[in-house]
Structure formats: structure tokens, C-alpha cells
Picture (cartoon, one colour):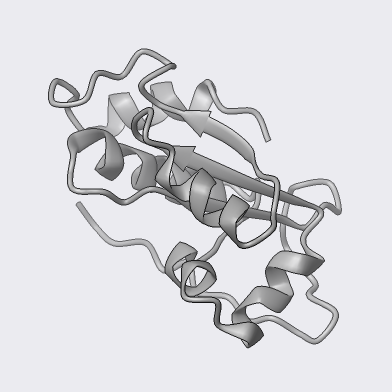
Length: 132
């Protein structure tokens, strides 16, 4: 699978030029856990970002409480988490940092941990079930 280049730069006022998300400042966080559904959540987040529905952002930086990395999250209109399972790790990282994300759980959307192939069809199916 080819890696996507989703790097982006923040300005002080955090603009998202080129985003098709209707002027919203949407940040997408994904579980990238070791399970198949974690890998799927990561790929779904990348697909949504590539499609201009928001910008993928580093959950680890939020969890590490890196001050300069929190500024864009505070400036975001919406934060969205995509977790692979009911542990809701990415949702909990954001909540522990004081944010209230719109949270999705792929397990609740019909993707079974340990039994989900991470392929283009699964990525497309999961992405369709997430509304940003």
C-alpha cells in the first residue's frame, strides 16, 4: 500500500486552504493500533483527509501534551476520532486533553476485530459510514 503525503503547515490563525470541508477547521484523529481495525481506522482517516473532508492530525502529540501542537486542535471547529474498537483510545486521548470529539468506532459500524481485511473495499465502506 502506498503511503499518502498528508503533511500540512499551520499558520498562526490555522487556515485550511484547499479543504473541501465547507470552511470548517476539521481535524481527524485515528487509532493506529496493532489490530486490523486499528490499521483500518488509520487508512479511513487518510482517505477522508485526502478527499478534503478535514486534516489528519497527530494523536500522539496531543497525548504527549506538546503545547505548540495543541494550538491547532484548540483552533479546530470540529475534532473527529476514528477508533477501531470499543476501547476508544483516540477518543479518550482527546477527552483527556480537554476536547470533545465526534467519535466513531469501526467495531460498532460492523468491522470485527481480528476478522477484518484492510483493503480498498473495506476502506471505502468504512469511509462511507463516517459523516464529517
